[in-house]
Length: 130
Image (cartoon, rainbow, N blue to C red; front, top):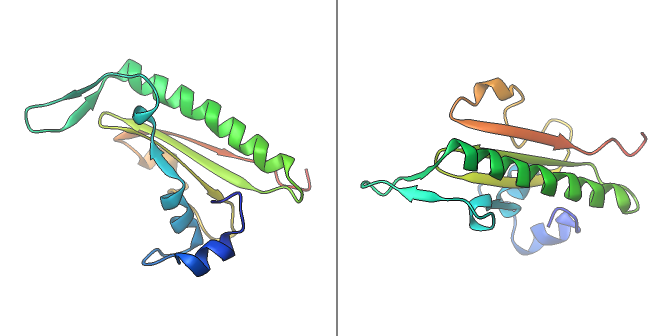
């Protein structure tokens, strides 16, 4: 939805209880990478999924490839869109999400070192003027 007219979609579905448009876009433009990337997801006795370190790296690599493609699409339209893709992977899942870049709004904490339970990659398109 981020690549279309967000305002039009908001009239139909609205951001609901989200704090801003970016949080809403991250929600609607989000999916679990392990649903599409062939990795092993073991399930513990308590039902908790577990993804091995090597498979987490594979999820990150596939997510990075998709992020670069999405950012390329954003740059190729007129006017170019500033897009941020956020890829994460941890022991329980891998997630891909993206949103338009808006001043004062973020779909993640700016200090990526604060994420201790997952690995993150954040890719932004160049600004339209560059």
